[in-house]
Amino acid sequence: PFEEAPGNPPPVEVAGPGGPPEEALLRDRAAVIAAANAGRTLVATDDYDPCQEPHLGYLELQVGERVVAQAQTLQPGEQGNCFREYIFCLRQERDGGEVEGGWVPTELLAVPATPP
Image (cartoon, rainbow, N blue to C red; front, side, top):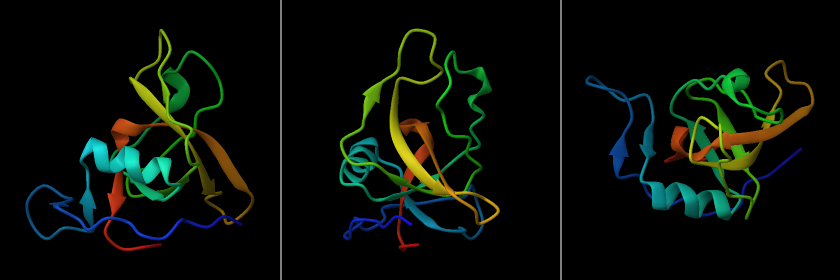
C-alpha cells in the first residue's frame, strides 16, 4: 500500500553490540532526518511504547520494525513529550492487515543499508 522513495545512503555504522550484526544501519541524526524528509524506509532501533506520551496519535514500535516516513512531517516534541522530535510514519499492520500511521520519535530510528 505504500512505497519508499529510492536512494538510501550507504551504511556507516553496524547495529548490534558485539558479535555479527543483524543489519547494517546508519544512525547519524542528519542522515535519519534527510531520509525521513525524503519519505524513505527507516528501522526502529529500540522498542517504543507511546503510552507514556501525553496525547494520542503515536505509533508503537518494536526494535527492527520498518516504517515508511512521510516526507516533510518532522515536528518538534511538545511539552510533556518523551522525545525532542517526531516524524509521521506508516507501517503495515503486524498481522498483515491495514496500514497504520502515527508519530514516531526520530531518536529511535535509523536508515537501513538494504531496502525492504
